[in-house]
Image (cartoon, rainbow, N blue to C red; front, side, top):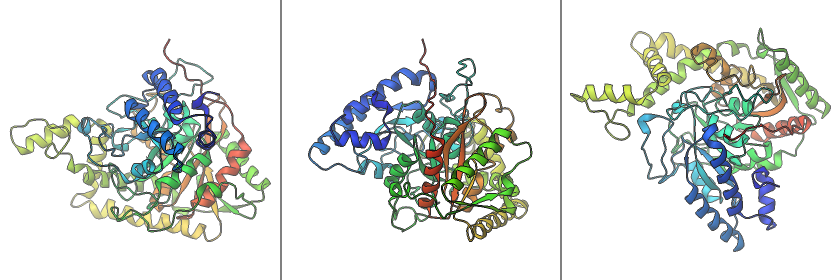
Amino acid sequence: MNPTDFTIRGALEALSEGIVTSEALTQAHLDAIAALNPRLNAYVTVTAEKALEAARASDKRRADGVAGKLEGIPLAIKDLFCTAGTRTTAASRILGDFVPPYESTVTANLLRDGAVFLGKVNLDEFAMGSSNATSAFGEVENPWKRGNDDGVRLVPGGSSGGSAAAVAARLAMGATATDTGGSIRQPAAFCGIAGIKPTYGRCSRWGVVAFASSLDTPGPVARSVEDCALLLESMSGHDPKDSTSANLPVPDFAAACARGVKGLRIGVPREYRLEGMPEEIEALWQQGLDWLRAEGAEIIDISLPHTKYALPTYYIVAPAEASSNLARYDGVRFGLRENGEDLKDLYQRTRAAGFGDEVKRRIMIGTYVLSAGYYDAYYLKAQKVRALIKRDFDQAFAGVDAIVTPATPSAAFAAGEKQDDPIAMYLNDVFTVTANLAGIPGMTVPAGYDRQGLPLGLQVLGRAFDEETVFAVSSVIESAANLTKMPQVRAFA
């Protein structure tokens, strides 16, 4: 068995039994990165020497009987998480040479539990995008092919496209990611893996480069639902450095994967049946509900009436917060600096050279909706609609235990296919943004394929801080789907 084919659970068992070492696991993944990353461009920075050193230290701890929960597991870190002594770029020129002197809380938690970091993976610039095409370090390629056709390069989704592509292509056993409007769940669906956006506040945002502070949510992607549960348990926990971090105990998420769904009530929102939705998405949705019904769940039709306002609400709130958060990148304190004739000229030249087109677009939208005369008409009204969207979920969860919907409106699309149409690109988040606006957990689980052999996912939504039910429902779908097909990524000849 190739060491890169282990799941995290399988690797932990093999490490415990002495079948494999962390050093061997890490080296196998580094070899795979060397072979495939020149094509996929999933990694921005590979820390091979640090990884092998950490793996040897992990093997020694295990030999000494002090193994952590994730002891020796090689992971990829989205290049939005600050990592002490390792470059953190947010995939932007403006932070191209930034080396943080501190560790984000999430990555510190993973290191505490014995994880090994292989390097930093690519993303849409400042996490703004649905295709991983806005990165200053180039596009990421999805390892899946349409009918194994090597001629068309597909996007991995975004913004966590590097995380999803690395895991799908066996360049990491799992990866950190962030989700502001679907940036964990959409790329996980496009790449045929699992990914969970936990409840807002479950994982600390401290040390994660900010996009939209009331929406940004760190979480994991991995090849199985249980692997995501193992990673999320390590990543979670109260952090006094983050005022939005919830002071709640962290459940045994992995144990919840075996709970089953007998007696659970599963909601099906009628508003998610969009006009023109592909028949194969509708069929997969129905198949997932049939699987759950066969395992003893009750399927209930529900209404989330303000769903149709979710996308416009999101694309007011998120750019407004981005406009505020990104004001700090001005060429003065850190990052890129372009010389100017005076301070204002320095600001303008630095931001013009440092930010890409999509980031500039969202800053301009955000600045506009926050400006005098438009704040009440746009931003304040969006916040009121956001409260109504949350109320819809609160009312729905009074009668159901979880909600199941499609994860994306389509399978992965070709690189460049929607890049010139921002509205078409934004519609990729149509099924996912509601969970961010309401702050609830949502998970993508691979459940089938489209007619061209590309993976499709279903989304499971749960009550706030009830990730356990989300894992239970997702595990039943995963088991019933029983997918074994792998992406046929190939290295350059």
